[in-house]
Image 1 (spheres, rainbow, N blue to C red):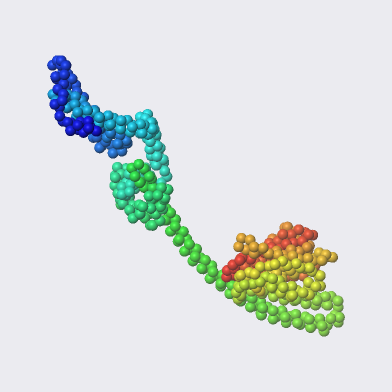
Image 2: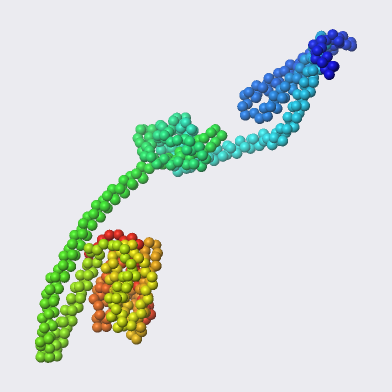
Amino acid sequence: MKQVAEFFRKLFDYSDWPPRWHCGKWSEFHGWLYIVSDLMVWSAYFAIPFIIIRYISKKHDARFIRLYFLFAGFILACGATHFFDAVTFWYPVYRLNALVRAITGILSWTTVICIIRVLPLANNLRTSADLEAEVEQRKKAEEKFRNLLELAPDSIVIMNEEWGIQLVNAQAVSLFGYTRSEMIGKRVRMLMPLDFVDVKLLQTPGNRITVREELMGTRKDGTQFPVEISLAPLVTEEGLLMAAVIRDISEKKLMEKAIREANITLEKKVQQRTAELERKNKELEQFAYVASHDLQEPLQTTSGFVQLLRKQYQGQLDERADQYIDYVVQASGRMKTLIKDLLDYSRIGRGNQSHQVDCNAIIKEVLADLHTMIADNDVLINAGQLPVLSSAYPTELKSLFQNLVINSIKFRKPGIRPVLHIEAFQTNGYWQFSVHDNGIGIEEQYQDKIFIIFQRLHTRSKYEGSGIGLAHCKKIAELHGGKIWVQSEPGVGSTFYFTIAEVVSDPVVKSL
């Protein structure tokens, strides 16, 4: 420690040694060659660090900054040793020279250690060939991007975060009428008002905004047109860019206007048709009134006189006259039944309101009303669990079930006990009912015709009826927003299906 203290105390004392000129036999040429060489090395070592520091100050993205500064210090220290070697020719500052050399050694090994640490990272750095290949790939990607941009069917404008136009495609040039040079660098407001959109909403990659406000684009000639715009972010090395896909919707607006006008016209026609239908329905009601009064009264009078004639004169005239009287009585009865059925048909859905209906209770009422007919024909009826309808017309629904049950009993097979199955299940917003029997069945060619009013498949002598029953069923099913159809096999039986909507709207009664 004594020597160290003495070393630093005599750091600038050079009385212990002679100058280097006095050591040995230095010739003039030899000495100055040594001095000039050391000074040249020192000046070069002194210039190199400043060049490195200047490079770092201009290269903001330079890597290994600490290594650059260590390297600069190391070179300065090496240059200082050469400088002091030249100085010692006149002033023997060997102690100071030794201290500078020690500092140079420390800086040298610090630099070596730092180089060893960054060597793995340096090995992973791309070579110039890699960089050239990357540049080439980027050029190809940019070219491909530009080609795709030009081939896009819609106009595309790419902007920066300040809404400055950076790039446009050919469709945008054609749509707005400006040249590319006239648009690039300008604010997008010259084309359309977009700067009200919050840019922060587009800072998430993949986020897309469709501008639904009524926006108008402006062409170079000043004309305006409606546009539909979709904004999407583009994250690049230069920062966030926004791509606006623009579509001229002038034709769409014209079409929407035409549709609105067509809807207004259609609504007027519907109102006219509804008014006409209401007028016809009133006429139908008037017809029903006439049928129930003006037609039935003379018919009852005729029927009454004919029956009186048969009662007083049957057997007093010849057999042919008695037969004629019977024909008139039967025809009057059929006419009375037909008028009543027509009247009932015209009144389906009139003056009634839909409400909740328990179909199980409806079936019980039908079976009670038809008890005699069921007992006389020994009919077996199996009714499953039926639904409670939230909206239906109970009177009409009862008539529908009653007609189907009567038909199944009427068209039974001789000598075979009639068996009926009544079921229901829910499907696609409807309740579907089925009434299955083991009767005579219906040939396929007649399965659609039986629901037409006055259509009969058999003569009155074989099966009684007016031919209106299934037409009643069809109208009632349609009143409930559903339909009716049949599946049948002659000699095996028939299954009548009908559907009832879960929610029944107010009926529009059709005229006859």
